[in-house]
Image (cartoon, rainbow, N blue to C red; front, side, top):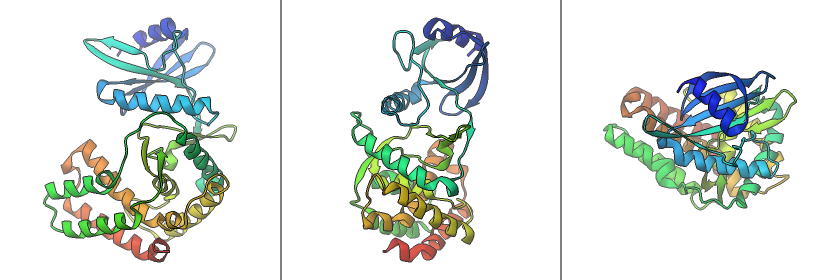
Length: 308
């Protein structure tokens, strides 16, 4: 889409006079940076029909959190109050999201884990009152999708994954659920120049065990190669995170003891999502073998903690 068209749309629908609109990236939509002559900057995202439902849910959650004073980017509304106005061009309808542009970097979680824990507990508390109806995620999503892909690939060690997935779910099944961020890794946090921590990207909001959010955030391991120093760092960050989380919200002993199981489940979940996006042939048998070795090693190192 022509940047000039977006500039005109911003002027007529938002009252924003953009001097320049610059392409940023593709991914779940097309992102741009708009800047006025006064150096005000705005983040724009054009969202196609395939992601329209996700975008509406995400915008609804972020608007709710913003109204509650939770640190998320501010969503700008059109002059008639729309958060996601439609743009029609060449027979296709897309949605436009406009937010304040926030500069910053990924926070040092080793230094700020306790604060992030407090904010995550507050997020979970606020989402309990959210009136939306997000999708519910269970065993089929977290474990079953990846097993289905392995069956399609005729992976010869499928039974090892089936046994591992069944064991992991049996140890976590029945835990308290709530509305989760759904992809709460540290890359979805932003530390601004004034030291604030802002939560980003609510496209994967879902109802699921709350320990999924907690574990994903505290995972400091290398996804591809497990290193002992990362295991120690992960334990340290988790302890600090829990001390902050517990100030606002309590987790049961069963929940906190399942930390290592949820990190293993995250590998099932994330690998399935990658295959959905990039196709079943984006990984080979050797990679699947290495992931199985990673999981086996991880649970061996963390076994005592996971059974506490």
